[in-house]
Image (cartoon, rainbow, N blue to C red):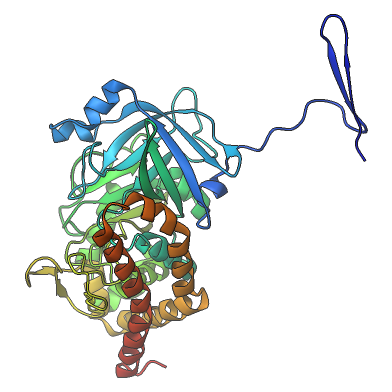
Length: 428
């Protein structure tokens, strides 16, 4: 039992004695990275921007929208807080780039003079407004499956974002695949992190440019290694070798096992806006100091067969499992080429067999981790915030509910399709 005694002298001196305890009471621990990426909780994030930053992020000049501007960020959950952190922030997106007064997504940088090592090991955050995901659960579900299969992928968390005190509703916080991420996911040293440019691929000539130009942009590593020789090596290997020698030696420039799992998971999820889709878009590749590459998924909001312009339950777009080209779901039937390495793989029997076995693994993993159940639980968690956010738009709430039901039902349909495909190719 603890006893509290308080003595006040003429000078107003107060002495507090706790039996067996000396010193001040301990403060609550600060918000941790595990709190920030806890999929079972919603973090409150308060973004405070001076008027100059507001003006820049709400400019009619689109070039101003992607310039980092100063501000402060505070995050809190269950009595724990990050405190007010000095940050730089810019708007995020290409087709989904919206001004501050609309429904924007954000990229946040922590690293500065007051936070030289970032916050809790994190250098950056990505707050996605999910404007192209009517279900609001695609990124949570997709990244969960990538990680469960063994593909290095982002963690996600939920954020209720306030900007200068105004409630802007639900965001998904996606871990940025930066050098901090790579340090957590890989045991060897990262040489470069490249972001693939829309409709560019591992083809001859695409190793041009510096860190900010070319078919592959350098997100990390240019300062230490200001060249793209590792990229040139991978491109030359992909272009020059015949299938019978290409496949066995692929591990010289790529982590073949990880890469084919990446392809299988993208295709299972129906990630038509990724590397294996007709846009050849939304992915990172990371090289180590031996110039060996791994694929990192990104931009997985348009997954799970969503036809974003439809409210009909079951009205889906199913990405083909095996094809050199495929239609863009919004293009009126226009076909685009899929990623060159994926196409080469499915057209060479040993690689195709590995891909199909990985499809089987992905399908079984979705059951093992109870993906549908987890995503259903996520809808319950985020429902109150969404209901408040769209309280004046009942049609939007109905669309979200329909798309959540369709998304979760789609998982079993995709598993059934995988089973039929494996039977066709004699894989048990």
